[in-house]
Amino acid sequence: MPVTLETASLIHPRPRHPFQKMSRLIRPKKRTAGWKIFVTVLVGWVPLVVLTAVSGLHGSLVALLKDYRVFARVFIAVPLLLAGQTLIDERFRLIVQHFSDAGLLKAEDSPKFHSILATIRRLKEAWFPKLLLVTFGCVAGILFVGNHLMFDAPWSVRFLASSFSQSSAGWYFELVTQTIYMVLLGLAMWEWLLYVLFFGWVAQLQLQLVACDPDQSGGLGFLGYSLTAFVPVIIAASTAMGSVLCYQVPHSVFSRASLNTVLGLWVAVMLLVFVGPLAIFARKLALLHRLGCLEYGSLAHLHAEQFHEKWINERGGHMGELLAAREIMALNNLAVSFDRLRKISPLPIDKITLIEVIAAAAVPMLPAILTQVPLTELLRVIFRALF
Image 1 (tube, rainbow, N blue to C red):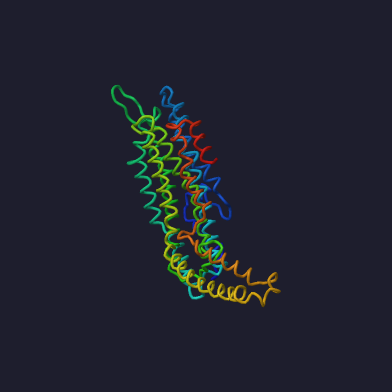
Image 2 (tube, rainbow, N blue to C red):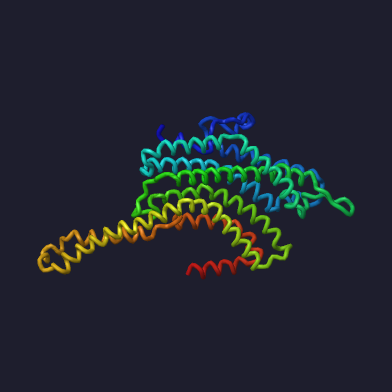
């Protein structure tokens, strides 16, 4: 069976979720990202507002409406994670299609490639990994995150004499709102893991790579575009992380240096997680680079030797051909090709995509940065860096 955009779908398997069908979260042949976002935001936000409003605590509703930690999860992270599911699927299908269209697969590897796709599909449709992710998201959201995240929020606690306990709104955030975010983030990371498995198995095939390919990655440069599929996930996670730092920095021992260290480590972790898997192809590209330098080096030397012989040693007999000589253009083109293959990157990714990933990880941290660095000073640093 040929590889097509329909047979390569990663995240749209046959619907098997009765609740999602009943709630119209899954409708045949229709994109439902907007409806999913609407329902999920409704579930995560409206009951939280109602419970806070009926609590009767003075200023609790205003405190909730101003709480960036809640806003970041409900109105930024969750919609991005849901919308990103479609982008992840579309990018995967395009990548799979390109392997066939670009002729990167040898005829004998085609059955193996289809077997890889079938395995990815089975893993995608398997219920047990999703059950583990949902369970982990619930447990992590309740035990390790939710009950510590809002401990200082007026709307999430209820003061009783000399002690305080969690309010009904605090419980709802912990059990529902935070859990929704954690589960969606876990499912997004499952899609990322499927990408990693796909890259790992494809890297074992005998791909038809060309050392002088214009993408300077032997023809694998298109794999770098897989990172853009996870930009919404990176922004969502960075926004949630930045919202926590935004509240912790003014009330902790964070200095500007320590904050910069945390932000630098966060960006490094995002690069390691999402760019790191492309290193699976580093060994194949390194081998291509070495062989290409030898093969094209021999060709370039032979051509240069003949060029030298004709136009230096025997120039007098060919002066009439000088203006129309094709050897000069051929020598220049060969030099360009040789220079291109010498620049083969061990990671099939271009600078623009790398900048997008770094920006997706760093920009949502601006609220936390501005707690330590005034906006005017930050703009002055950026201006100096640009000019």
